[in-house]
Image (tube, rainbow, N blue to C red):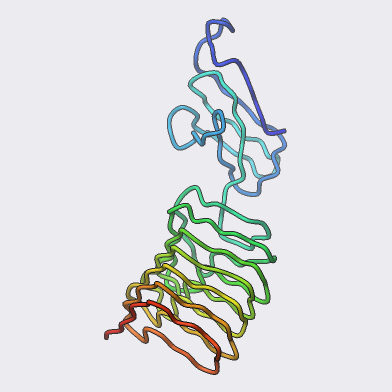
Length: 231
């Protein structure tokens, strides 16, 4: 069940403090994280992962003391069908996250995703009840692109140097973009193609292209935003 546990007291066990532990038959397609007593530890010397075989699901780690160890699936760019919370900064070639289901929360937990100048940081099509917050998206073509999405919210985001659009709504309705900061890059906020009932409030936009682009859209609300553009 991806858990290995020992009493965290070497003298009680009559064993020394360090050991090699092995997990078998893990189902992760990429190397998972290793946690000690529920806290990630594989980034430090206390539980270095020495190998992970994606075919057999075998993970080997050197640990510095006896305790309770478990694995946790690592987060990587790709299609997501359940809510996620980032635990580290990510980098991406082309698209990072494609939202493949409704009722998804992406909690950036203060971390960032940096692209290679192409693709979308986060992309969704015909989904509903999406929440994206507390995240930095850097150097994509589009930071966030929502197509025919409804009943969703995006807040406490930092969008930097996304070359086409930082935040793009194509069609869709009933969306809230609030308390976000946009710097550099292309169009700050783009709302087009029959999108309606989009609320934009308390945002700071400083773009090298259009600060705000509206085309074929109606019944939107803009409140207390600071929007500027320069080139």
